[in-house]
Length: 496
Image (spheres, rainbow, N blue to C red):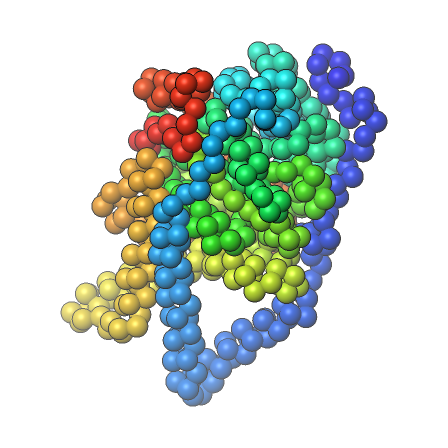
């Protein structure tokens, strides 16, 4: 322990930068591999064929192939909804059987929410003598350091200041803290998180029940609370964001875990085996969605991913000026992850490549085409209406449109019901406008990937409104010794 209760790397004689860029890292992405050049060549050849004097020979084939791909994605969404219907629940373990656990929270410019965060972490139900917590801060971020030192922290929660260095990203800060972790298991939280008090106990139970010994990471569901009120609020974005998260964390990831496939981890509430995390080199400090990359890197190493049921509640970003940086970073990191893992895709195996394509690849492509597709459909209908004509409706295109939107609505609706967030007819009708905004973020992400590939687009976090009394009491009641039961989780407060 350094002065004033701050952990100093020099105090322990450990190298905080030992976890450098993994072998497959965004930092080492200095051009396309032979495989990637072949893909680019195929795309260019297809585009060139369309501008030939006889495009009608090629265009129908390409259109049919694109339609088949989007129909496959629609069928995949439905399959995940079905596969995710029966979650695996492990019984909560007694205190005597619980392993040492470490909580890492990487923070930057978060003085405003520090007291709120510490209060939420203090409510975690886990034996204090087997719990270690590190608030990982940047050396130059004096306001956040001061706020952390002033907060009434439990004895197990320390302030750790990462040494100066580049890049200034969350995964680099986590790597700096990793040599000082004392737990057998580890979880990562963010500044705005409110984890379920029993989440660590459930994760420990799942790891203990893993008879094969290949389970490396568990993902908890992220659920979106009530949005903010005031001039920086956006009820439309808040509701759509909540439904999007519900689709991802309540249907997509549980379904993929049930099918034994890898998936991109969420940026928070991942629970790791520390020995495995160290063996794979920690996080990629140069990937701005280090979570997505790590999920597939663990799979490449022969490890398995799973999910748990007890959630972490978060607040939506809010207005468009806050939503756009978050989504830009997400998509830029997906582009980085796709570029890294498709250099040598055979390392993932057939199942891994399929999972990467249906999550990271499909996510980037969908975000890129939503806006132009919506604009094209709208323009076609308006021009036809003004000209007094009936717009042409090719059967295949109409089928793709209906099934694509229907499968997305189904995934959001089922996920929202499981997460306890609202998703009604109005949300379904306005969803295409939200999907169109994704194209703006995708274009911004592509530009940022070229100009500033390792820059971290920070999301501003603000204090949340207190949870409803009934919800708070439900959470506290479940932590009582006579109420420890598997599979029961308190419902989140709905999005406004």
